[in-house]
Image (cartoon, rainbow, N blue to C red; front, top):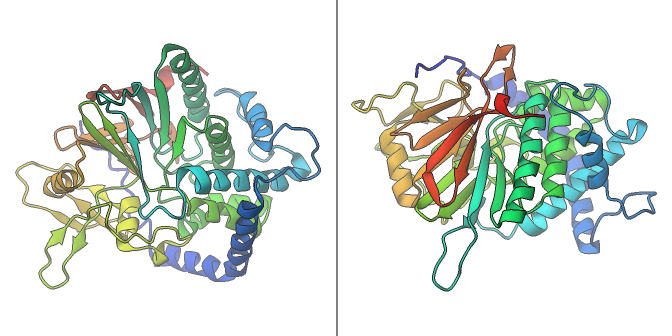
Length: 401
């Protein structure tokens, strides 16, 4: 397969960094206020809908609102649930989402931003099989997300009846690039909260303040609503995990947005790969400049383009302006050290919607069919925990919805 050169050059340049720095400084009092409100919310218990006496939650209301749309009938780009109360509704949904992740998915007490899902059965502990749906970058492509969610809900219901689990993993980059990105994010958040045991969202490089302020999402939120709401979304993004690892019957697979991170010795120039469960991460930051280098690279790194097995290249600086590109030696060292057999990622655009590297053990998936005026054959991965080597790369265009 020939690579389409959609590779982002200087996506994180000095101008983008200054934008992030500007918002980080100007919104710092807002972030402090959000932290105080969040702490109080967690101590006092479940957030209640302001002025609402019925038991219907804000999640149900968002779910009902987005369930009326289809791939051919998307919501109005400029209208959101609740009209004049839309910002209040979003704020409550954000709090519900963040509270759930902090309490049940990725608590602050977790030492690393890695979630483990065990599916391998033992004699004393029989686990049901699991079917995974891995979704790459959606970037506001609401028409694809509608199909994916409707398909996933049907599979969740089927799995419940037939005795297998279903897990849908969104591998980051839900926002930016597309005019429906805010709708996209709200729908996926509602889906996650409606089916808590079945859905996981990982952080992408666009779920970060300087990038989302520069590539569409931030401007949209601030023009339609307020800087405070944008700050609330950025604060939510920082509490998304970076990695999931699933241990299955015949191996383990890992999901992350960008790529394999490395630590470089400044004197020798040699590299080493981190052991994820012992590395001192500092990833819960709204601004990427305040993250540790491994967290930055997990969000930004890529495999070397058109890598040849005979190549002696190990890694070099990325054309994106941050992070590195890595070769097969780095990939295999990381997998061996962290006991992983396959890695599924997003972050790169291919007209075919996917790309395989390193004996098909590193799989890039892209799930937006309309990306900055480029038509993509958007894909997602279907994988069974009983045989992870037999994963299938499916066309989103083949789904109904």
